[in-house]
Length: 417
Image (tube, rainbow, N blue to C red; front, side, top):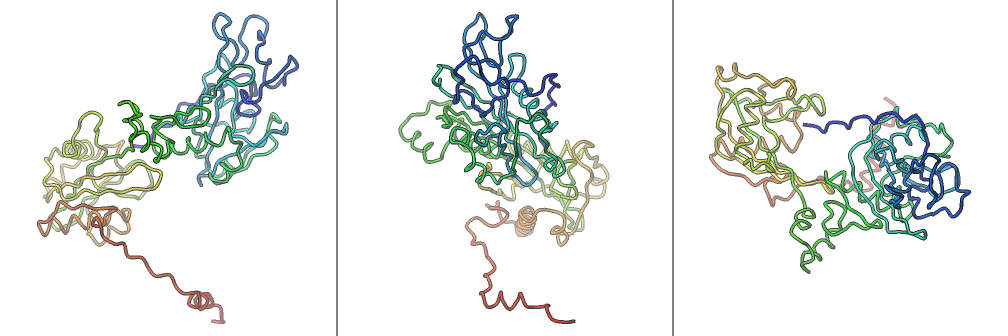
């Protein structure tokens, strides 16, 4: 099932309050009572009249509290990152704000996005936490880094600057954004994106991923820490690479057509095999997951047959995906008539000839289905597959045309018809 969007933060009646002009105020302390009025009293001030703490100011009983900053990694539909240039001459930064004493970090970020960029959007999940050690005035800072978006093209193109705090905003490729940001902020972007793609969280101190950080830790450093025995058991588990596991069942009808289902989420018109994620954290086995998913999706309580194959797929930066494919056997007309799809999970089902799979399923899944159909017919397997291909098989690539051939091809069709 897809991730559920975060609840929209409550509106704040005072947009722009407590903004951090550099998205990391602890790195640029203010030194006198004539502090920038847009950022609240200077560090060490007793705060506003009436005893209400200033944004990120003193805690209970007047004890100094760390400065808390909420930062957003705002993405558009093309995966570009929003980088803001403040109107007051500071370096480029990610959108962000100091957190008021009466706010949650998500509320502060949503407030700032409205006030500074005219964006009314839901603030997504927490990607990273960066703790900065005390600066010149002896005050530490904690930055919460949240995902915002991806924004649809119309909203990404409609940025405005209602409070005048930002002079401009640019959509940059992740590496371009990383290069444009100051050294104290750029590591948050890199670690936050790593956490986004890994489905995890990054723990930073002064921008450096810590031992045991579930995301953002360099693999070479993780290996070195493991070999020197520097990990405790909990940190070792947190830092190890993760994989997503699923179980699917291959059913055919009496004439050999493959049973496919259309999920109610994701890309419309993209079909799949019956099945779904394995609740491995609850101790569920792949075979039990296959039976449960078929029961939930199709209303059929059938014991899966033999394992036909295991497929491994990996995209750089993302967790590996492992799929167990079971033989569901041949469904007769009576079994097909008993199918009742789960209304919130599936749009419908159909049985299709193997020759029509190319137009309905992803290439990797098509290769998996075709390989498992052969294994079932020949009584072979289980198969070890990588993206639907036999493990260890050399992938055939089309040879690149020579420059002379490319030039000749470019001229084709340019004459009169």
